[in-house]
Length: 94
Image (cartoon, rainbow, N blue to C red):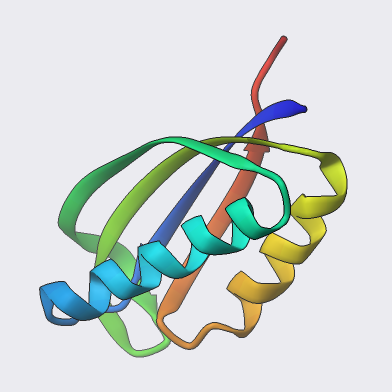
């Protein structure tokens, strides 16, 4: 398995809704054989420009290990999840 990190920005919402979004992606990774190592919650921050009519968002950085085929599924699900404003998946250096 290779190590990855994903940075994503979630629309402003209540704490429970934010936790549900993070749990959704943790469960997706674990269901496909990946392991979540750490989730950094950076909190609510102002965006440099409006994204989908939002000027603020909650930033998250998730570190995980997974097979490369899982990345395509994670990317697909993040693209169709309405709560996600932006995301970026990066492979960590060996």
